[in-house]
Image (cartoon, rainbow, N blue to C red):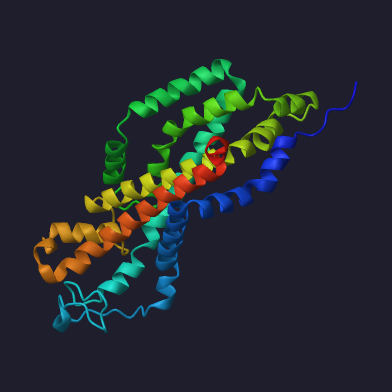
Length: 297
């Protein structure tokens, strides 16, 4: 009997993934623009604090001043520079949202792969766990947990948010694994006795990388909305600057009724909206780049 060759689809996928992403994003103007927008806001939030002057003292003589050459977005209710606050407020929601999305995707991928590959009792048990998780109102659960732990750190919020998001992706991962495990390259890997772990994580999952990454982008968007929502409701600690905290202060103190306060009110909203639009359009571009059925069109 002739020796079975190593699975070609995995090698081909690995060699061409970066090229497919670049080609797909550049071919889609909206996807490329979304990627540039996301990278720009990430750079603004993480590199910006290293560039702007962090000396932002309280100045009662400069309360609610209009935008000027010295203060690009004017000043806020304490006389502090609004632009400096905006720059320092973006990093936390982005990295916490990314951490929450990473946790949710990892849990969904691991459990979905196990359920889809082994089936049987393990599959039934994980499906029941998923059904229970889906029936729990996510945002209400987050509110209850965050309200109970009053001084919960940002990484704790990421765990809370991530632990409520994995169930929706689980079923899609499970279905993908069930389909891929019947393919020829997986059968070839089984004939070589490569082992279950290697077959799942080296043969099957790399062929789902595009699907997983697109869903990761969607999960980041959902996580940021959840985190900002908790800040807006006043349930998160107010120790560090945050776009959600800026919106909460505006709502709590009726700053939106002051025309001169509009930069402080609208700037964080605009950043969140632009980041969301960028993530959505980038996700569509990546889907077009990595989905063979869309790529052929």
